[in-house]
Length: 493
Ligand code: BG6
Image (tube, rainbow, N blue to C red):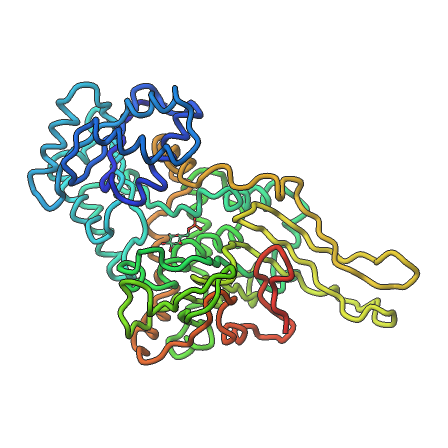
């Protein structure tokens, strides 16, 4: 690995505190950073290197650290005081990075700033020469949301492309750094057993759920303008869908992988605006009880306008019109302030073609499921039917859990893997622009329709599993939402 200078715009913000700095620290602790890697925090505060190091020391004190690693890590940190609104700030940064002592010419520019500033800062980097790869590589990391809809995404991309080539741009979706998300590819393509079953002949439907028990967590300013569909489904959940549904790539290189993901997105049947209600459900949480504690409704959260109709819950039904998946529904669902925080892919298989046990005491034969839990516990589980012990012919569901289930709580944060990929120049787990653009095309009709229907939004109680209306997305009565690995969390009709 080569030395590099890792510049964080928005260094004193939340993302930097909660994700980037801890991830870089852990990479250092794991011996994955070269001696010459320096981290330059760009921020408005009147700080010098010492003050920045002291601040980072405080942030990391909340976590487990090793004194000698911490000392080494803090020495990597430099602070550049500047205001992005000031035209002179980036030329001054350029002067420091290119003429200052000891800054490696390979540079990462990480945009941990408001999305409204992505385009402008990228242009400024271009103007002062920091985008030009003379003597070292230059990489730009863009956080989500990438645009607000298809049109704004196009225009942001256009603006980035004026100074950076596609190969220099890393559009991050931190879901692609999660262990079980990466495991999806291994599970599917390293196991011969599954591939023959992984299609419309055997799979009844697929559910991808991300639920949170938390509310907007002080981010109402951003969240109220975005809503659940943009915040989670357009990005993270559609990415997970592509990995569940894609064809085996020609090889594991970034372009082959992303080509296959784009093919999935392109094959999603467009939702006509007139059919939005049959394909999507939105709702907003009202007051309730979460984990035994009273929780306010969304409209009473600080910073939320009293008449907001922003959805804090969204569910969608999609079809992928290709040979593998024709007519298999994919249900995507997310919500804030739900009963529990959990993310899971649930794949339901069809019933066996012959009802051999009809004449026995077996009342209802349950289908097989594969559950892939992303968080909080990483787990892959198969649900199968077996005979109960005893003289009667009765069945029960047995669970075949991967041996690591329950003993491997997320040890690695998604950002650790992804930051290393940026430094190593691997695009496999980053979004190519066509992926982003096709993902916007999938949700755009729904966003447009919801933007017009602004006088009413269905409620769901904080602490519930969402609005009852979401059940209408299922075409059949025997279909129901799988909420977590614990089936007592499921609400079957
Ligand atoms: C972010 C969203 O991208 O992902 C948040 O903006 C959401 O609203 C978060 O809470 C979920 O990420 P994770 O890693 O906690 O599942």
